[in-house]
Length: 391
Ligand code: PMP
Ligand code: GLN
Image 1 (spheres, protein in one colour):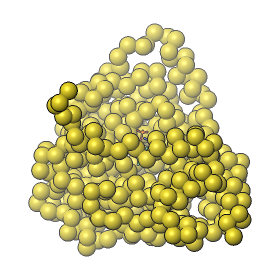
Image 2: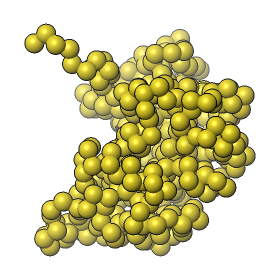
Image 3: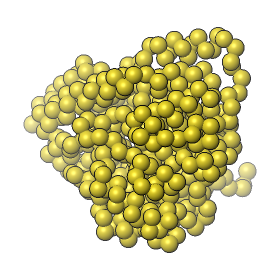
């Protein structure tokens, strides 16, 4: 064949998560790279999903999701974020947050529209924006505090701004945006008549600072698409059940994008997630507390090894400065070396920056702490042993 395939898709690298997970397997390393828990989520949800396979509801679910899951998403939105939404017209169930993001971008972006994105960023945003003909306007947060660069953000907005993407709690930095930062972003959105895609998959994984939704701010209700993931809220990343809440006119267009992507999501998993979202608030608080303990174990261990451990307020991830240990290696080379020589896999943080513009920092790696405590302790022990072999 001589005709070209789609170059934007073809030229995209395989995701860093797959790359590093394969490397971990090859070297039998502890995988603190790709963010997935190494324990099962609630067993009552597994049982419910298993039972649901046996009771004859295995055909297509409705396009926007099973009514019981849409109702549970709406109830959770009111309970946790004080954002009342209409289950019928303002909720769309998707196959993971990944699909929710793609469908949201499809619903908003026309060629030439500008989209404000905050670096470091999750790896699916940029390729989808570009695929749709959107023009990324990147604003970079800087370690160690990842403060919002207000002047740069202001300059990134303009008359052609269609939307900003806001990920809080943020992957990979662990930053949780505070009320003042959200108010500043909301002001810019009002001034420039912009939408926001709010990636809030880690909404329940915060360690002190509260999770605040941009959508709860004045006038933001009509401008925001809010995205959640059962993968993160229930530790079932393999289920790929996500949900979008948005004002009805916007949700209707997200649903049309969803109908072209997957049409509908597995009904048994939807039923189990509906049950999960209706759990007592204590379940969600305990999830965050357990994750916080893991964060503390890993952060303290990494600091003992000699990493420059950055603060983390939420998510599955802690970032570490490798400068004291890397002997001049960049983040990619050092991540490979740690997998091969220490038996611990991480993600080089430069993967969370636009490969087509600017120079990413090369001194940071991301560790996932959503693992059993004994695994985190073993990982730290391996890193300490590796370090003691260096001098
Ligand atoms: N957004 C962020 C910030 C993520 O970290 C992830 C993945 N873990 C996703 C979206 C995708 O979530 P899902 O697995 O539900 O597709
Ligand atoms: N969100 C996960 C992470 O950041 C990875 C998801 C994936 O592999 N697609 O590690």
